[in-house]
Length: 152
Image 1 (tube, rainbow, N blue to C red):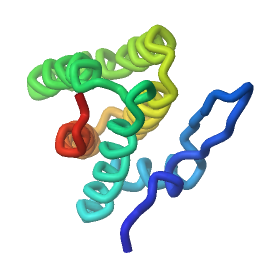
Image 2 (cartoon, one colour):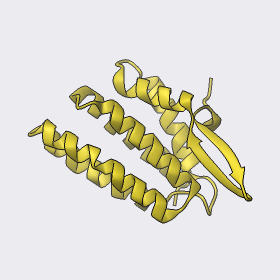
Image 3 (tube, rainbow, N blue to C red):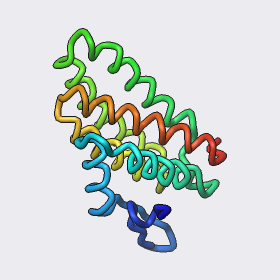
Image 4 (cartoon, rainbow, N blue to C red):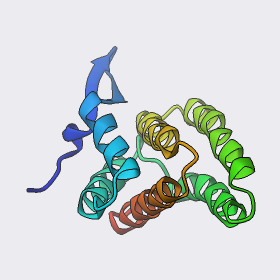
Protein backbone atom coordinates (compact mmCIF):
# COMPACT_ATOMS: atom_id res chain seq x y z
CA UNK A 1 0.00 0.00 0.00
CA UNK A 2 1.37 3.40 -0.99
CA UNK A 3 1.98 5.94 1.71
CA UNK A 4 0.43 9.40 1.45
CA UNK A 5 2.05 12.53 2.87
CA UNK A 6 -0.92 12.93 5.22
CA UNK A 7 0.25 9.71 6.91
CA UNK A 8 3.27 11.70 8.09
CA UNK A 9 2.26 15.35 7.98
CA UNK A 10 -0.67 17.29 9.41
CA UNK A 11 -1.98 20.37 7.61
CA UNK A 12 -3.89 23.35 8.90
CA UNK A 13 -4.63 26.81 7.56
CA UNK A 14 -4.28 30.07 9.40
CA UNK A 15 -5.08 33.37 7.74
CA UNK A 16 -5.05 31.75 4.29
CA UNK A 17 -1.61 30.22 4.78
CA UNK A 18 -0.90 26.51 4.95
CA UNK A 19 0.95 25.28 7.99
CA UNK A 20 2.40 21.80 8.23
CA UNK A 21 3.64 19.79 11.15
CA UNK A 22 5.01 16.31 11.62
CA UNK A 23 2.18 14.26 13.11
CA UNK A 24 2.54 11.59 15.79
CA UNK A 25 2.28 8.72 13.30
CA UNK A 26 5.02 10.31 11.17
CA UNK A 27 7.29 10.74 14.19
CA UNK A 28 6.74 7.09 15.14
CA UNK A 29 7.47 5.90 11.59
CA UNK A 30 10.71 7.87 11.51
CA UNK A 31 11.71 6.63 14.94
CA UNK A 32 11.11 3.02 13.88
CA UNK A 33 13.11 3.21 10.65
CA UNK A 34 16.06 4.78 12.49
CA UNK A 35 16.07 2.49 15.53
CA UNK A 36 15.03 -0.88 14.07
CA UNK A 37 16.80 -3.21 11.69
CA UNK A 38 14.96 -4.64 8.70
CA UNK A 39 12.86 -1.52 8.09
CA UNK A 40 14.38 -0.71 4.70
CA UNK A 41 11.09 -1.00 2.80
CA UNK A 42 9.42 1.39 5.23
CA UNK A 43 12.43 3.74 5.06
CA UNK A 44 12.13 3.90 1.27
CA UNK A 45 8.35 4.51 1.47
CA UNK A 46 8.84 7.36 3.93
CA UNK A 47 11.65 8.87 1.85
CA UNK A 48 9.60 8.71 -1.33
CA UNK A 49 6.59 10.31 0.34
CA UNK A 50 8.66 13.08 1.94
CA UNK A 51 10.82 13.67 -1.14
CA UNK A 52 7.73 14.24 -3.27
CA UNK A 53 6.05 16.35 -0.61
CA UNK A 54 9.08 18.62 -0.21
CA UNK A 55 9.25 19.16 -4.00
CA UNK A 56 5.54 20.12 -4.35
CA UNK A 57 4.14 23.62 -4.56
CA UNK A 58 6.34 26.15 -6.33
CA UNK A 59 6.19 28.79 -3.59
CA UNK A 60 6.32 26.26 -0.77
CA UNK A 61 8.85 23.77 -2.10
CA UNK A 62 12.25 23.44 -0.53
CA UNK A 63 15.08 23.58 -3.05
CA UNK A 64 17.64 20.90 -3.75
CA UNK A 65 20.42 23.29 -2.75
CA UNK A 66 18.78 23.84 0.65
CA UNK A 67 18.69 20.08 1.20
CA UNK A 68 22.24 19.62 -0.12
CA UNK A 69 23.61 22.28 2.26
CA UNK A 70 22.43 20.19 5.19
CA UNK A 71 23.39 16.93 3.49
CA UNK A 72 26.97 18.20 3.08
CA UNK A 73 27.18 18.58 6.86
CA UNK A 74 25.83 15.06 7.31
CA UNK A 75 28.45 13.67 4.89
CA UNK A 76 31.25 15.40 6.81
CA UNK A 77 29.87 13.96 10.02
CA UNK A 78 29.69 10.52 8.43
CA UNK A 79 33.36 10.65 7.45
CA UNK A 80 34.35 11.70 10.98
CA UNK A 81 32.07 9.16 12.68
CA UNK A 82 34.49 6.30 12.00
CA UNK A 83 37.32 8.17 13.79
CA UNK A 84 35.41 9.76 16.65
CA UNK A 85 31.77 8.82 17.03
CA UNK A 86 31.31 10.88 20.21
CA UNK A 87 32.46 14.15 18.63
CA UNK A 88 30.46 13.31 15.52
CA UNK A 89 27.37 12.71 17.65
CA UNK A 90 27.78 16.21 19.11
CA UNK A 91 28.22 17.65 15.60
CA UNK A 92 25.06 15.87 14.46
CA UNK A 93 23.12 17.31 17.41
CA UNK A 94 24.31 20.80 16.48
CA UNK A 95 22.71 20.32 13.08
CA UNK A 96 19.28 20.69 14.75
CA UNK A 97 19.71 24.43 15.50
CA UNK A 98 21.01 24.96 11.96
CA UNK A 99 17.87 23.28 10.60
CA UNK A 100 15.72 25.50 12.83
CA UNK A 101 17.47 28.62 11.58
CA UNK A 102 17.14 27.57 7.94
CA UNK A 103 13.44 26.78 8.34
CA UNK A 104 12.74 30.15 9.96
CA UNK A 105 14.86 32.08 7.47
CA UNK A 106 13.25 30.46 4.42
CA UNK A 107 9.77 30.87 5.89
CA UNK A 108 8.42 28.08 3.69
CA UNK A 109 5.85 25.63 4.98
CA UNK A 110 7.75 22.63 3.70
CA UNK A 111 11.03 23.81 5.28
CA UNK A 112 9.32 23.31 8.65
CA UNK A 113 8.58 19.68 7.78
CA UNK A 114 12.14 19.18 6.57
CA UNK A 115 13.39 20.50 9.93
CA UNK A 116 10.94 18.39 11.93
CA UNK A 117 11.68 15.17 10.05
CA UNK A 118 15.46 15.49 10.27
CA UNK A 119 15.39 16.67 13.90
CA UNK A 120 13.23 13.68 14.83
CA UNK A 121 15.56 11.34 12.96
CA UNK A 122 18.65 12.89 14.60
CA UNK A 123 17.18 12.45 18.07
CA UNK A 124 16.56 8.78 17.32
CA UNK A 125 20.18 8.13 16.31
CA UNK A 126 21.01 8.13 20.04
CA UNK A 127 24.75 8.06 19.31
CA UNK A 128 24.58 4.54 17.85
CA UNK A 129 26.51 3.81 14.68
CA UNK A 130 23.84 1.55 13.14
CA UNK A 131 21.14 4.17 13.80
CA UNK A 132 23.34 6.87 12.33
CA UNK A 133 23.79 4.84 9.16
CA UNK A 134 20.02 4.40 8.84
CA UNK A 135 19.65 8.18 9.32
CA UNK A 136 22.11 8.79 6.47
CA UNK A 137 20.24 6.29 4.29
CA UNK A 138 16.93 8.01 5.00
CA UNK A 139 18.35 11.44 4.23
CA UNK A 140 19.98 10.21 0.99
CA UNK A 141 16.73 8.64 -0.13
CA UNK A 142 14.70 11.80 0.64
CA UNK A 143 17.17 13.85 -1.42
CA UNK A 144 17.00 11.38 -4.32
CA UNK A 145 13.20 11.29 -4.36
CA UNK A 146 13.01 15.09 -4.04
CA UNK A 147 15.19 15.42 -7.12
CA UNK A 148 13.31 12.68 -9.00
CA UNK A 149 10.05 14.49 -8.25
CA UNK A 150 11.25 17.64 -9.97
CA UNK A 151 12.70 19.41 -6.96
CA UNK A 152 14.43 22.52 -8.21
